[in-house]
Length: 436
Ligand SMILES: [Zn+2]
Image 1 (tube, rainbow, N blue to C red):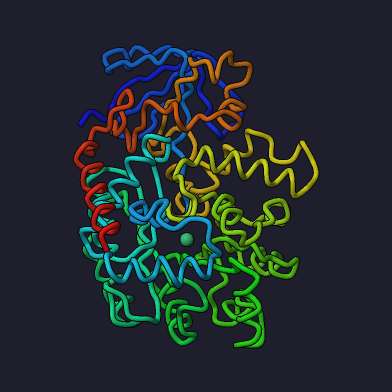
Image 2: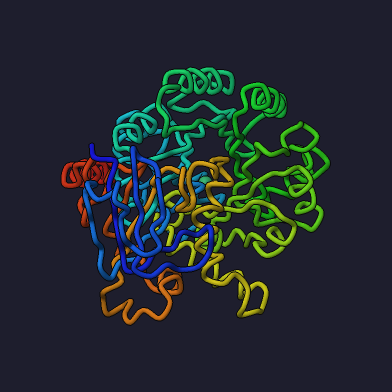
């Protein structure tokens, strides 16, 4: 596929350095950004490259969805408006026990990737059963992904116990070691679903193999209270004592974050994934974005699974993060639009440890980019394209997406996914679930 070209747009938002370039361009060679052309003009040596001009579009780095469960798109809207613990215990876990297999994960992940590409995400972190199916789907589609293979102490359709989860997960990492767009992480589900000896084993293996640890943490007040009752301290402190709070830790949710918790995360160099819509929708709480960022904690944004959101549109999620941060702080100047877009791009890349490779439009990085068409009544006129990206429904106007220079969304058409077929398969899953 073509991965060398010269693209120009009405606006380019490189994220780093900040600011907006008008009528500018990007030269891509062999999948990487070779040059940012501030004047939009090719150099003599670039004149022979294929050209694409996107009038009325803004070009920016692809968004990084730092937490989700892609295959759960097949449960979208199945069980809304229920408290989190009841939702998991009574609806989601029984449905997973009944329906989830490799085919489910393949079909659900493809549906999720279609939605994510259509709404501007080019890289996602995933945590779900049958991660080998998710990894294969991502590799075939061409998206960039972190596959956090699940580890849980209960029997699932995928593994009998924690030891088998780790064994299968590490074998998966070996099987895909030649796939440059995929990375693998340990995905212990949560402190309350993984035993402490296994958490400590994961800490050891993570250090030895330089693999991240992606875990739901302090999602609800009940989880923290139960943790204190069970091990005499807050779950984050239990993880710290087990050697897990370090630069490899990706703590998802953290709606219950005391000042001491924030200090612990900052001291360890751990990262946090903020999932504002999921947290508010399940009434779990709110991650203190301002306090975390003030202490220098790396923060990215995630949608969580579509069963708890119900959208995988990271533009929508980023807008929600901004609104909730301002409500939380009572301040209208907190998290300006440019900082919000940085969270959704470079911020997510920092959480996943790949900010040297993606997250901004800088020479040498992979050409993971998107183009949003703002020539529409809902977005026009454009005084400030960055403001439009955050404060209008930009996710519905994404027309192009590239990963490593490969054109995965071309004028609104997916190039590596068969959209009618994946919609048909998703409808079949819905019929099966409705009949059960
Ligand atoms: Zn989650």
